[in-house]
Image (cartoon, rainbow, N blue to C red):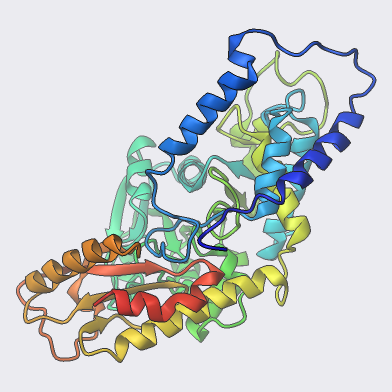
Length: 448
């Protein structure tokens, strides 16, 4: 092999699966192939090859040299199952549009809920984490209509924006130097009253920090707020066996929160978009009730549109997730959990090598698989300038990192003062592919 190659051998499996799918509809009368220039194989080939050429203008998200943002290729079984389902193109709003795929969604979501220890729950897939968090905060607003929503200053910006859409008051809580929600600041705000919901983030998007959930749960006992866990990025790490004690403690008590969001299209090996929202109390389904006399007539069973704010939703996403979880069960000690553990080992190795290099200043060790480092310099402004330079130069060598603007206090200074600013532009690497383990030295060498 002279260079990178995509997996093309598995396409034969798709053909075999399509032939199996055809058997289920063999009783239908034959239909003539569509006619017209738009279906002509030569025209299809021309347009498809043009699309392939246009797609060259992308970063190589699928390759270990892409170590920037949270972009992970779907597993081959997810890619194939999604393609298979698209020949039918089911819609998981009502059973009329997606009978089999709706059943597969319910099974797949139940497996995700079981991963967090929930046997009884309400939940469904969404178009992504943003929509999933919107539903979680929408339910929170229904239950606590006048309560303020609190999230850490490192929580995803979507919580502030969603609160605005829902007309819920929102406030940020400061973080400590480990990028976790500051418990003292949280309790100070709780003492003033008026808080309806606290959002705990288990895997922040900037540095992968894990909020101290056991302590937040203790505060809930005293102050009585609703607790939502945004695990869009980090949720699957509950299966990993090599977490630090503080992160392990947070994941171990996830079953006590009121709602959870997780994104299968991040660590769950799924195509975009596939998010998931879960509620511990199934009774919140009452807030979704609505009339749709032309949609829900075909069955007395639960239609997923009856417990979702979204209407049309791709059944193909559910088929892909179901197939992936059949191949890679969500269990500790399994193959899927091992992939996560390998990512974390690679992140710890990258952090260790950067910490040993006098050119860099690192944060505390990663809690999941995101590593952040600054350039050593007399001032934050100069360190930021150097980070931007390294970011651009690395990309020229096909190593793609990311940049983040973070508080100076997140860094353990080993000689450079990083003075003059409260924040610094730093380099960031999301080591979320198991294959990254073999590329750590390359990432470090290309970061100089």
